[in-house]
Length: 365
Image 1: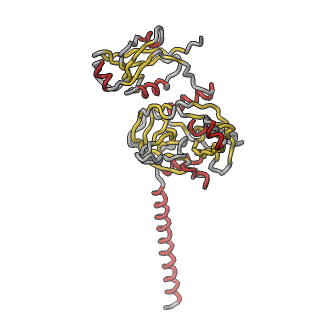
Image 2: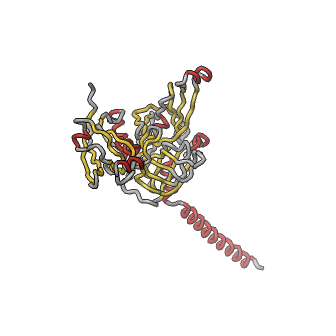
Image 3: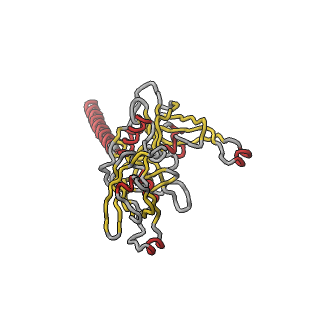
């Protein structure tokens, strides 16, 4: 082969190699782009705003016997939170950050940059299980945008982020799980003194430590606060596909009140006394159903009396919430504030009526 042919052969090889390399590079770029979707973009957007929360303090036993033998116990509990403004306001659960049985409690927030900051409680509400914290990081912080829970679609994709089992502390990154909206408007009643009403149900894996972390849509907007899981029949508190989050529209209202007052004004009374309807009660009073709460007494001149409620009326709905028993009634009334006018749907004999009751402030004698 002469020199000219050899040069042409080498040039051809280099040309085709260059073309192949370009095609392979374009293919790799396409594969990389195909891996990025709405979910990965939402995670990338929200992750920097997720924080780990560490609450440490001293727990005192109320029982003097336990205190004598065991003394006070140093406790440490982990949870999740999410930054909701660049100036350091952080949203989490009340049951994560506001420990009633713990004294000398310190709340430490860990950011995704690995820094640790002491947090102060701006306001907390046990009944709604919402707590608002504040840190001073000395710089603007990444934060999640508040979306809406008013138009959630059953089956739409959602992402849960948080600190299950303290894994955040390993690499300063939140754990991510993906699922769908399983249901909305779930009324779980009273659990451990808290009222879980109008909850979002999701099958995104939520485990111990995820409490207080964000549930976001594929736009990376906060739609709920992960708060509750249903364990297995064996009592194991771990994910079985039944997780519940507080809807963001309720959160917006609560944090506004907490910022302004530091607490929620529920200093009202109704004047209603009611009980569950058992099968025996249904048969004795010839009632049409066991669902609802039957009124056993109404205080004179109370909000209930002024609204026209009577003994043996059956409360089946309060506002937009169905009330199948006393537990649900108690939980639902906590959604309202002093001065609110609450529509109450009742069964009275064969009639279905709606009475409007104004929640009056408790009179201090």
